[in-house]
Image (tube, rainbow, N blue to C red; front, top):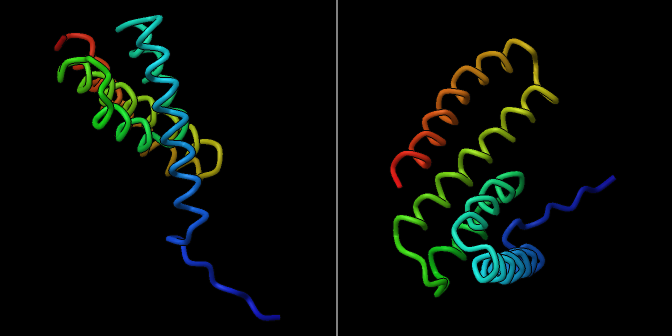
Length: 121
């Protein structure tokens, strides 16, 4: 049986990223319009459960009318939330020894990230 290798940079992947980028951009604008800064922080946390790259690109490129401090805070929160999810994936799918070691490192990073996001702004 012949296995076809797929190019990860093919058009389907680019279209999926474009769709995710547009969706995240629209949701981010909507959240900022109606829920302001608190909404952006909550959205940042929720986006961390998935791919954060479209969110980060959207926040960095979009004309959202927010300051660089808010942009940095949103990125830090999304990254910390994404690290929580990665730790959950390791516990779910990985070996217990690996999960414990990962949890120690990730917990420190997550706590520091959330503290920075909460106290720096």
